[in-house]
Length: 250
Image (cartoon, rainbow, N blue to C red; front, top):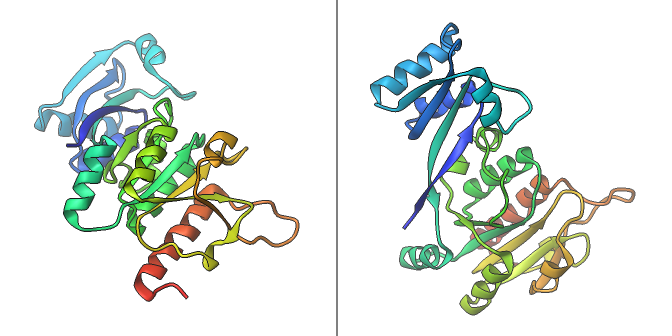
């Protein structure tokens, strides 16, 4: 069963959009002098209609609560109910009669990339995202915004990557590392139960994780370029798998 996690949203634009989409919030904090602008008033109005608690607090309290450099006048705790345990998610996938299709994200750092990856994953049929337990910046107001809401829809598992890979090996899910070395992605059979491992923007897949993949695949690059942005690389391999599932592997 999916579990609820609270995500701190520090953008009044994002809070307003999420409220308008029907997302649930445990609580909204508003600075004492934050009621003058139109967007804040609209947030308060929607929250009131939906019986979401709005707590008026001091600017100093907001500064202590904020996790970003820019201090907003309003902060919301959104309920994300798409958090899963891997065993339960696999059971759900099997019941639906589809192949497991996962992305394992090895300590990605930038929420713009995370948001883009989540959007691509949801669009291309990925049915699970695995992220390390201590990825504090994984779901933020920015990654939610960039993902166009996919971050709140696609199943997410917070789990040690080595443990997740062990489960996948037992389940017969082939694990591909997306790296600068390996067989070209378009010359690799990506059909069936598959997981792609994507590495951090600066160092790629860690050596310990790389040792545990079944096979590495690469995206050929023009001379002088090392690699694609991780978000772009994710789109390339996910849609190659989607193409192969529809047209077959040649």
